[in-house]
Image (cartoon, rainbow, N blue to C red; front, top):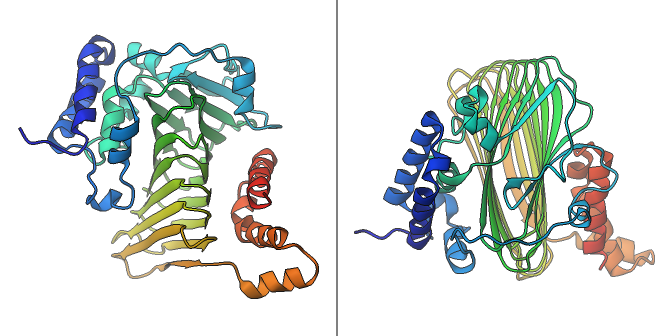
Length: 436
């Protein structure tokens, strides 16, 4: 029998699936997807070191070395102080909290707004929810990525959220994952934003355990006609944590979707962002900031697919790499034949603070239409020595001067965050990191 990359992991996942089959296959339609996903893993394995999409991020090797994929349960206590520590000071939000992948009613808010329908994924599957059945793996597609397949096999928890048409949700919905164990957590969020609705989501994953942990989170988001949805992904986990995020979005006519990805810490982080603009008048905005130190490794892979005319996408990712950290950016823009009058812009800029820090960047633009305005590009360099000298000549110490320049470099991404509490949270981390 042929052995694939990650074979030991796949063997354990297969054992867990069989042991939990009655629970995982209670919904027939979803059970079929899980079986298909498992077969995909068994037949293809996890990404190997030469796989094109993962060649700069050998996540499989790291997981084989550090993560225990067994079914062992750990009963670490979590208190209110632990939960509050990983929230954002001054942020008023509806908190939906999961501990080790399981919904915690104790640490979650009761959402009383009629315009928000919330259920856990486990309850939605058990009750044969139409929303869960309609969206489970419909956007992420388990046969296109091994870690999406892994999630589809085992994810039985997460948030299922339906925002009613014309609703304006004033407070953000904060989906919080807190992990205390050294094994893996698989979670899937299914989100539908109704016509002309306005809402903001925030997702944050944190690990309490000192030992390595792995979280695999998939978001499948449908944005209906005229809706305006924002999604914040904040990654500031422990230095021993491994995380992979898949956000898959489909947009209808005249909708707007904005995603802000802030990566600050973790052993190895992979962010896959896939947005499909499936109608006229769509707008997609993607902002990213990765501020890395130590040996942190962050890989951002983005795909924007323009399928219809008169749509707009803006993408700005900036990275600051210190010590022996490593950044990766791969941004793809597709403009299909019918997508005339498309405006698509992509920019990736990076600063390396040491000789040991690295970045691999690859912007890609494929156009099949002829009446478009598109641009893409990347830059990598060091701090401007003349600007640094100018500040130091005016009595500013070198560390402070460097911090000022790096703040200025990151400012346009931070300004796009809009929510003051999140801006302050990111600013405080940058300040403490740069002015150490």
